[in-house]
Every structure is written in C-alpha cells, then in structure tokens.
Image (cartoon, rainbow, N blue to C red):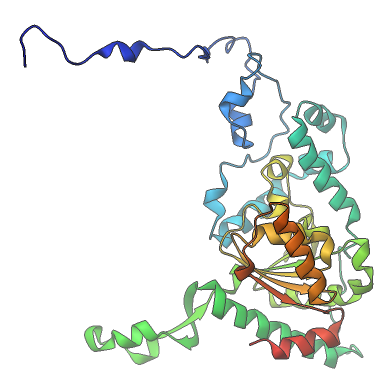
Length: 349
C-alpha cells in the first residue's frame, strides 16, 4: 500500500437522504403525539411522519398490542390477555361498542384503513344473535340423552383433533409416550411414568351467530353449552367469521373482550392465532376470513351447505388473489343440526 493514502473514504457516514426528516422536530410541543402508538397499531414510522405534521390520536387507555408474536403458539397468553381485557378494560370497550363521545374523537383521528377495521368489527357485532347466557343442561332434561350423545361425539372429535393436529404434549395419562419408552433402556425411567396427554386448549371453537345462520341457532347454542361444560377449548361467538364475544367460564356467559387497539391489530380476524386448530361452524358469509387463516392454522369448517358451494367460493377467492392453504382446510359439509353433526362426526377419522 502506498504511503500517505487513505483507502477508506468515510464521507459516506455523513450522507443524508433528501427525504431525511428530523425526528426530534416539534417533539417537545407534541407530547400527546402518538408516533409510538401508531407503530403499535401496525403502521410504519415513515407513514406516521409522512405529512411532517404528526396526527394526535386520542388515547382510550387499556393494553396496547405489543406485537402478535408473543401470542403465536401460546394459547395461555391469549387467554390471559383477553381475561385481562374483560376484567380491567370494560370502560373503553363500552365506549367503543356504544360509540361514546370519547371513542368518536378517537375514531375521527384514525386513517381510512383503520376506520374500515372498526366498521367491520362493529357490523359483525350488530349481526351477532348469540344467546349470551345459554341455559345450562338440567339434570332431568327431557333431551338429556341426546345432549349426552352430542357431548360424547364433540368430546371425541376435540380429543382426536388435539391428538392429530395440535402436536403439543402435556403431562397426563391418556397416551403412551413412545420417545420416553424408547429411552427407558438408557435412563431406567419407570414405565408408569412414560405417559402423556395432548393439549386440548390449542383447539378453538367458533360459532357463526349471524342472521343467515338463524336456523342453526338452537344447535349452536347446545354446542356452546356442551363445549363450555368440558372447559378444555377456547369458545368464541364469530358472526360472519369475526370474533366479537368469548365464553367466560368464570361468568358463565359470552362477554365482549376486544379493545379498539385489538381491533386495529386485526384480532377480530384471528391475527393472534398461529399453528392453532380451529373448528368453525357457519355458512359461507365468513368464508374469506376462514380461507385467509388457513395459511397459519388448521381449520375444520363445519359448513351448513353442500361442499361444492364452498369449493366454488374458495376458487373465486384464490383467483382474486386471496391467500389460502387448501391443505390446512377440512370441509365437513351439510352440518345443520345435532343429527347431521353426529353422523358426520362418526365418519371423521
């Protein structure tokens, strides 16, 4: 190398883009500006400062979604978050669902894209005709025998799905643990300890309570009661595929559980679910939400009509550029009442 030469040109360190923005500009005078908030709601920083005048978004309080990754593959974290909403954030959820003045101010400051999310949730909430407090089965119910049969089939399907698709093993005594049995020759573990179970909490049940499923409302109500009694899965009211109520085992009723921040994070469209097993009961009105979520989850679609109708919807959705993984979609067609459900359940392998 020649003397008196410097091959490292460091001038690039001082390069500034013509579009560079002083991120500290006006910060002191904009203490309520929510650049961090907009990032939490899924917007990029660049979009937030695009106009060089940050927007002030009124705050409704509550828990902000810190990123959905922490909820993926973790059913307990989702349950914990939603239970916290039910316990601590009733005021802001009430403001949103009844469109109080403070929520209207918040809504006005949102972008058109976020307004559409709020409107989509609100329309689904108004469609909901779920019985918020379905009657629990009585000891001497005249339909007790049929309900017990329905409960048996539902429990069998849930256990089968959890075994085949959840893949999450827990401590238990339901099945032999093959790996531990194979290792016994090395670690001398007692054979009685080589047992395990599958985590049924990874299974999610959703019931479409929109007016188009009114003929199935009685059947879905019975499913909700029986599923709630077993208590080993998550249960949601999902008119047209949007989550608007969750079953609260503590309160024995369906309750509102989503805050405005949750909706802007698309939680009503299942964004917090990944590698979960979903049992969706409904017609084709919510099929696009179901199709989209097959990319991340295994979905059993207990469909009210013939299978070819839903396949046609699927082809149309895919041709329009929609994302779908057909390998993660199992269609169980013509499930409209207890009889058809039990007949289909017996054929499920």
